[in-house]
Image (tube, rainbow, N blue to C red):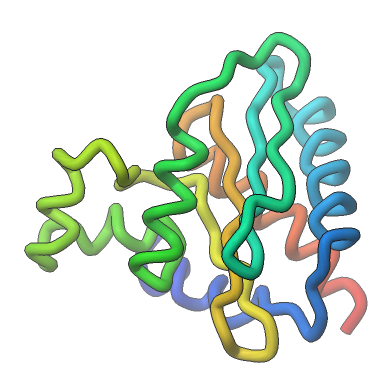
Amino acid sequence: MTIERVMQQEEQLQFEVFNHETALDITNEIVEYVKQHYPKPVGIQIFYNEKMVLHYLMDGRKNSPWLERKTCTVMESGHSSLWTFYKKESEELYKHWETDERYAICGGGFPVIEKGVIKGAICVSGLDHMDDHDIIIQVLKKRLLSKK
């Protein structure tokens, strides 16, 4: 994975319309994807229009601050949390975020971009951070690119 690939994903995986029902559908799709491909449960959080729309922990997953941290990272950076992971060496702000407990400089948070505007974040936590990111990408690709 490269920062260029992450930027390409952000450009490709955008919504014409996103709402609370979309958030629920995406959560269910993430749960099914994780059940099929991973032995461990994850937590899922979707933030949209300045409010928490959904927070779900699969059976066996304990609550942790990582979902909130990933949401904060996406909303304040305007990019996926994996993007900030790649930018941390070249951007002083993100280097500082590494030691700030409000942020997560790792994969697993992806922006909800609706008609070109960042309106929220989809976050997954519980696996390796690259897997957390990839789960979101695979679900969004199936949802957004298979219909084009």
